Amino acid sequence: MPTVEIYNTAHESVGSLELDDSVFGAEVKEHLFYTVVRQQMAARRSGNHKVKSRSEVSGGGRKPFKQKGTGRARQGTTRAAQMRGGGIVHGPTTRDHGHKVPKKVRRAAMRSALSRRVEESKFTVFDAFELSEIKTKAFKSVMSSFEFGDLLLILSDKDENVIKSARNIPGVTVIPVDGLNVYDILKHQNVAATKAAVAGIASRLGA
Image 1 (cartoon, helix red, strand yellow):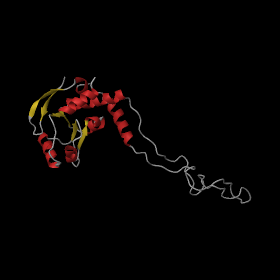
Image 2: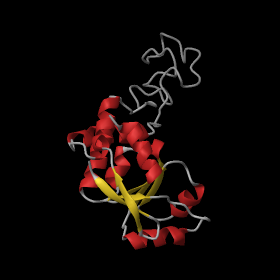
Image 3: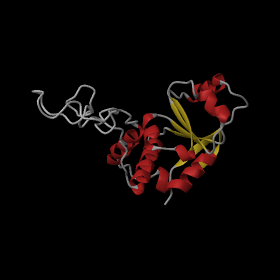
């Protein structure tokens, strides 16, 4: 069972914590990372490109000219694809690029990603992470004391002071336990969580 130090925001050790072995000491299955991250990226695609088909183009209610005697090919509507301003055949339409990945696979990938950061000693636990006001300088001071180049900070609940203090810092993401995902864990070299957030993660992903 992996054990980590608990720190306050002044980088002072205030105790230690035994992490849930099934979550933070699991076997790292790297092949799951591609599957789950690909699913996350696909779900973020908007798929909003769209053209009008024959049925959606306005006009064309009557036959453009008579059937015979004009020397031209017969036409039934100006909405046909071969007519100027007509509908587009087989054009792009709004679609959902998302696809499903089994829940067990997503959970296993998240356990693997967390275990990888623990193995690398890149997982830090805070007793609490609170700021009295919205101040980017205060957040940067904590990062500097821990020598974090980038950071994924996991909180037990949303804290507006912390979130807004960090939102303009490049390479920093602050999320609640409910928003934890594989992509963000792998994207950041340093992952930190409050003690309460660690308990929430264990409750969510534990065996």
